[in-house]
Amino acid sequence: MTLGFGVVGTGAIGREHIQRITKVVSGAEIAAVTDVNQDAAKKAVEDFNLRASIYEDDTALLKDENVEAVLVTSWGPAHESTVLKAVEAGKFVFVEKPLATTAEGCMRIVEAEQKHGKRLVQVGFMRRYDSGYRQMKEAIDNNFIGEPLMIRCAHRNREVGESYTQDMAILDTLIHEIDTLHWLVGDDYKSIQVTYPKKTKNALEHLKDPQIVTLETKTGIIIHAEIFVNCQFGYDIQCEVIGEEGIVKLPEVATAQYRKDGVLGSGILQDWQSRFNDAFNNEFQDFIDAVRREGQPQGPSAWDGYIAAVTGDAGVKAQQSGQAEPIELPERPDFYQQKKQEEKV
Ligand SMILES: NC(=O)c1ccc[n+]([C@@H]2O[C@H](COP(=O)([O-])OP(=O)(O)OC[C@H]3O[C@@H](n4cnc5c(N)ncnc54)[C@H](O)[C@@H]3O)[C@@H](O)[C@H]2O)c1
Ligand SMILES: O[C@H]1[C@H](O)[C@@H](O)[C@H](O)[C@@H](O)[C@H]1O
Image (tube, rainbow, N blue to C red; front, top):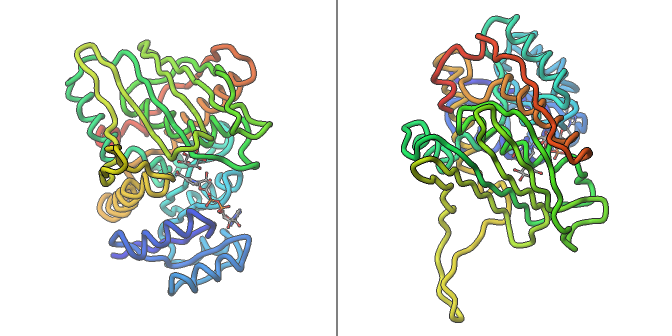
């Protein structure tokens, strides 16, 4: 069976995922598309030569029997409503981050999914599918470095535009570390604090950049995460876990090495698309295979989306207060503990 996707939002990442589904991964096709900008939906159908129906909105798209899974790549504030409608209709959902823009919205999805009785939703936290992070997780799970004690990481973007606001450093950028790091060490967060070093002259006036985020986990692991979104030199993701008996570090992405003008060097990738291209491909193949074979996705769950939202909210509060803000999460429901296997991804 080929999995039919209905795409809600044919903007930048929606188009990338359409390309991925039609040209790169196997087992799926695009059955339908919609976008509030109907021209964008039509253009996607033309550009990718799709045999897909074009609908005026998500409600109409969800009625199409050929749509078995919904790919939600609209703007963040629109995600919750589409995901809830899709769950109500019993369709599988792949939703780009954020699951919803509020913790309450994420909880509504968690509740709806539990009511449905089995997992339908996967959130697009693609770093869990990056081979470097997976190797780190394997080392940690196999106790290769002993108990993790500290984590140092950096999330650097070359530059950001006018529309990038202060809270986006947490909700749009750090959100990836928030998801990846609790998965990596199998721990929950306890608190978050944000401090501001000297500001770069390359940031627009409204933005403090860089920012240093300190997260503490329940078992006492301290995480220092640098968010620097106007670093100028490229897209740079660093992560190092320091354990009782060793250190495991995210490998640099291999790029060609050159010798020129007295320098031995290699290129730095410039954007997240190229840095995580393989991870995106792996995450889609896994989603498609899991729903076709197991009847439910196995990747980052709606509960992970909820953890990210609660932690993100505390992070935005910490940006304003300068204090360590508590992160209060209820117990993970049994529903989201069904399979140890899920934790591996
Ligand atoms: N995983 C990642 O690293 C990653 C990277 C980039 C973007 N994203 C996420 O993907 C989402 C989309 O980002 P983008 O950069 O493609 O944005 P975009 O603005 O390029 O595209 C969004 C599209 O959704 C459409 N849209 C908005 N509301 C809609 C609705 N209610 N129904 C139908 N269509 C609607 C818009 O018209 C637009 O075409 C965001 O949530 C963003 O955070 C994730
Ligand atoms: O939406 C993007 C994307 O999630 C990238 O992975 C991240 O590095 C950027 O900071 C963010 O703005």
